[in-house]
Length: 438
Image 1: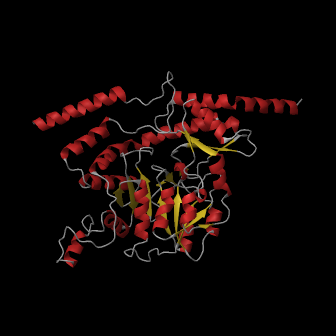
Image 2: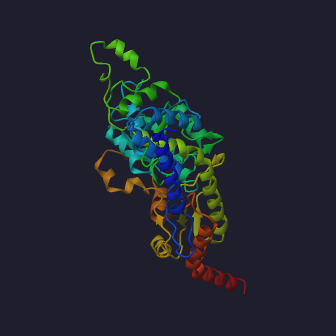
Image 3: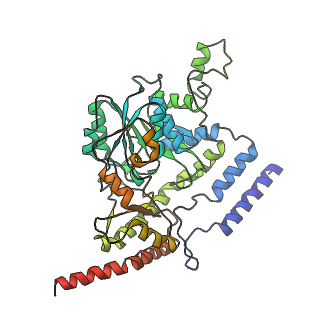
C-alpha cells in the first residue's frame, strides 16, 4: 500500500475503534432514557463521509448518481433525483408538475388535495407555486386520507393529489390511484415518514407520478441531511435535475441536446429553465450508500417494537385508540401514536408530562391538523367538509419512540411507566366492573 492508503486505513481503524467504544445507543437501566430518535449511522458511514471529504470531491457528482440509482432500484422505479432534504424533494416534485416543461402542467389557482394531518413542507410548496391546497380529513383508524371525503373534495379546479403515508402506514393506493385515473389527477406521494413501506408488495413512492423521501436524522436512515424523489417518468426526472441546480442543463441526461441547440452559449452554463440550488453533497450520498442496505433490518426492529406495544397496551383499549395497519400494507412505524378516546379521565398533557418526567420523550403526531396553524391563515386554501378526525389527532394524540434502537429493555421500561401512570385509572375501572356484577 502507498502512504495514502496506509493513512486512510489508520483513519478507518480509528473511527471504528471510537464508534465501538462510544456508540452504544441501547437502553441503560442504570440511567433510563428513551429518546424519540437515535443515530442510524456507524463507523462505515462516518468513514465514508471522511474519506469523501479527504478526496476533496464533495460537490454533487458520481456518488450522488450512484446512490440515486441504488435508491431507485430499491423502490422499483426508474429514476432517483437526490436533494438536500425531504422538504426539498417535495418542493422539486411540485415545481416540476407546475413547470411549462411538463405537459398539461399545474397553473396558479389549480387545486391540490392534501391531508390536513400532514407536515408544513407537504403544503408550503403548493402555496409557493400559487396552487390552492384543499385540506382533507384523515381516517381515524389508519390516519391516512379519508377516501370518502377525498372524492367529495374534488372540484372542477382539482388537478392533483398530494398524499402522505402517515407514520409509515401506507395509504390505500388501489383506491387513490383509481380515483386519480377517474378524474385525471397527478399524484405525488410524500413518503418522508414511510421509507421501506410497501402496499400490496409494491414500494410506496412507486405508485404516483413521483414519490419523495427524507434522510433526515430522525428518519428510517440518515445521510445527515438529504432527500430523494423517485419516478419512472424520464421527463419528470430530467426536469427535477434541471430545477435542482440553477435551471442549467449541466446535470441533465440530455445535456448534449441543449449544447447542439445553443452552440453560441458556453456548454457549461446553458440556463434552460428556472431553478434553485437544492443539491446534496457527495458526503450525503456516500453515507446513503452504506445506510440503505441496513434499512430492512432497522424496519424489522421497528415492527417488533410496535407489535410489543400493541399487545402490551391492548388492556387499555377503553382509554386509547391505536393506528391500524392498512390492509395489504406494510407499516414501518416512524413512531408509535396514541389517541385518547372520548371521556378518558386524563389529558394528553397529563400523561405526556408523566412519561417525560421518567425520561421518555414524546411528541405530537406529525404537525397535527395543519389547518389550525397560523401560517396557513395568510394564504388561499380550501377546507373540504369538516376536519374532525384531524382535530382529534391534534388535540388527543401523542407519539412515543419506535425506532431501531428500542430494545426489549427499553420496551419493558416504557410499558412499566405507562402501567404506573394508568394504575389508578385501571384500578378505578376494575372497581366499577366489580360493582356492576355485585
